[in-house]
Length: 256
Image (cartoon, rainbow, N blue to C red; front, side, top):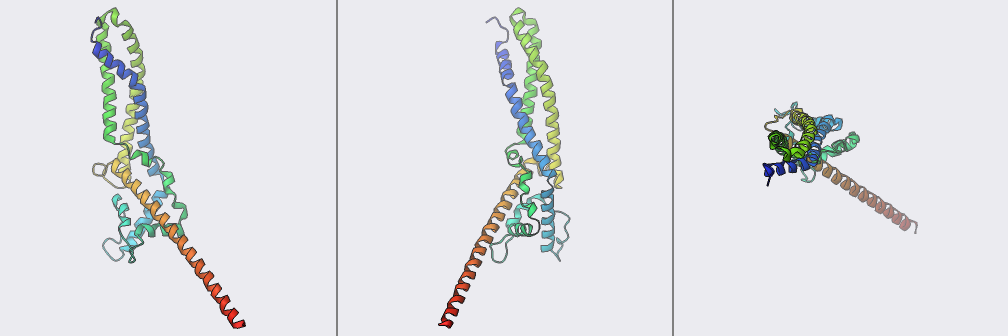
């Protein structure tokens, strides 16, 4: 009953107790976004596949106005499964995987370069902004309560001493966090620009989800190609065996 602003102090202590784990989780999310941006932009294999797709598109559109494109929209990656061959079985994605398997098999595992991509799709930049603001606002309230507690007298001496030590550490942590947050924001925009997209119209979340879906569709098409090739191989072997057995039967009949 004698402690001034006891409710405010309890809220401050709650913030102090959660601060460490809150900062750790927030850093983890920021680093995930950062890693995803760097992995995508530094992936030589992904870049090579993009070139192959552009060449493939220009070859298909040869003789038309779209036959000499210098690039394509990012969402076009997901349309590779829409274009089908006359037999309605093989898509353009299947054909791309087939060509790569025959001519550039080293590119087939490009997804290995993008280890942070899937986890980054679960992070919303808006949520990171809100989290950053909450941490800054929380620290500001701690400072306000610390300043107010100076006039509380002996009843708040221990509170004042404990809080002062916390603020010294927290301020440094928040400054480092703010710098990392700003860097992540720049890298997120740079990711969209890397693909020739406007960050305002094609934000980080859209880029990463599109790329993840492309990876999944690509791997699925490659797996289906491998299964089909295996079936055709077994079929050819079976036909060869039947032909061989038929030849032996004919020779046996002739000898008799």
